Length: 289
Image (cartoon, rainbow, N blue to C red; front, top):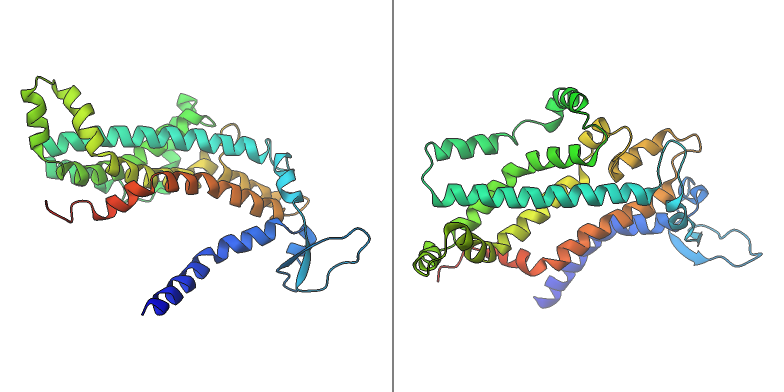
């Protein structure tokens, strides 16, 4: 049985990692190798004066990673500048979504609110409608407020769309925190806000980490609004890749693959940093003590 489990996990890992492996191999190729009709998937070190490797081998090079700092035709900034835009927008929208979602969830969980179930359903219903269905009115509003092409515009927009998810996720976690903790804090003389920060927030850290991962992934990968609202200025990486399609030189596939691998790194690093909270969040509330 143990060997079977290892075999199944190995097969699953191979399938899951295959796209990343393909990106890694593509990032080591020249553009000519990426558009060849015959498949070339065995990287070899190129020797000076040596001829072209025979299929399925190709001469590996790190040229694509070096060209990430160049400004390609059809773009106004380099990949690294667009990555900076993505980092700023995703970070602030995630922080805002988690904080506002935690406050709102605490209110729904601890206080009697008239029509609370109806309000919660209304909050959830905001995710039923496809975001691109409202892109035209949002575009008109942003033009009037001069928020198009700004970091603030996308931060506000991503926060608004992620807030419903944050509220529902955090409410489930806060509901599992015993009220006795807050009652004990009140007995000790803590005001409501102090009890929230010192009791609820540390206890809900697991839920906040889980919520942050989902909000970060949503903001990090969002494409439609980033492409529609930002023709210049704070253009994120997904919109930057789309803009390369009209390049006269043709799609620079090695640079796209290298950029995609770099683009994945922040999400992987953040997920690894909060992995303990994620594992605990999967089973949170399933075991009664």
